[in-house]
Amino acid sequence: MSNNPEKRKPALCNLYQQYLDSQDSAGFINKVSQSYTPATLQRLAEHPSREIRRGAVLALGFLGDYEVNQTLGRALHDEDRTVRMVAENGIRNIWTRAGNESDRKSLAIIVRLNSAQQFKEAVKQATELIEKSAWFAEAWNQRAIAFFSLGKYVESIRDCHQALEVNPYHFAAAAGMGQAYLQLGNHVSALECFRRALRLNPSLEGVRVQIDRLSRMIEDK
Image (cartoon, rainbow, N blue to C red; front, side, top):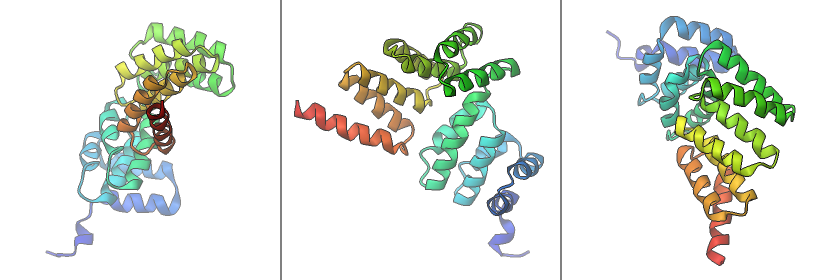
């Protein structure tokens, strides 16, 4: 039996390296799905090898549904910067995969409406989705974005809070709530929200800057 550690590496390492070389996400997804279940990938996401963690977290972001939210939420705190970056991209993707196909299609429309700055229509359609699927955290977050853009900061805060009630890993909702409190001039509550966002995702450098600024501002008063 060979003692060469390279030959004992999981196939995931080779698949991850092939993806880095080719940037062929479809090929990576196809090959990984043939060899690994989501449950196995979740275990590998906490493997001692950073290469394996990188591959597993990348795969979960492509293949996982909302069931992997907690695993990717933990990966946001990984000691490896690449794992953290891949986890952030992945978890944002899986937030849109809750619910059934109809719910996901409705959410995609709402996201496009927000991107097109059609905020009133986004609120209307998000409200309809929430009434049908109140456990869909990203629907609350998207309505919060629309409310914020319409200057309805109290409503935005309410929806961010609800998104976090449903999905306690939703760092974007925590940061969004902080921005809404800033608009209302409530610096103490804004600081609390930004600190919560940073606890959930320590890589949010813009939030870190806000925390430093607000901390100094409050101390100087």
